[in-house]
Image (spheres, rainbow, N blue to C red):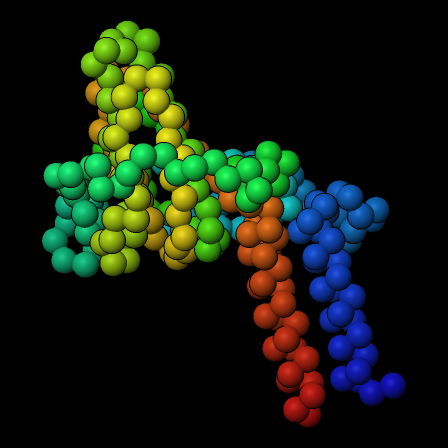
Length: 232
């Protein structure tokens, strides 16, 4: 058997293993976790000083708490290095109400929570990456002190082009789910919380999207390896 054929066969086995891990979890395949050196991590993200957090795919992701950006110099700095949007739109109604809850797509057992941004407090989040082409923001709030005057206003901004992707204005006892179809290296939240004890913007994706993001880097490496060997 030619060396390229052996690599092709080995690559196919690796792909099958990756798919199984993505759909069932690494611990579901006996011995594989140990082979891959799978260990529990506290976060699916790692932050690097002076740069964006880098996303690391894990079969059972830990929910990452997106930090607030308390250094306003990085928000309001002039030029392309600052945050492109620093004011709320005059009309928040253009974002509409909460998206319908499609139980065919967002089945409870098929929904994966991978990050969250929490309050109290107004302001901006740090920039964060999203590897999924399809995900949603599940927003909730708690207002026990002054519920009659409570209001949560938030937007999600693409930090690369300044496009406001979605947002919502919520009052007491309201709940909003907004679907997003965008991925990239830099997104951020802008939040205004009035008379609110706390709020949570939960980031969720489907198991299919999570598995696809997990598989793609390995597929690219395998394809590159196989193509290189076939050319020899």
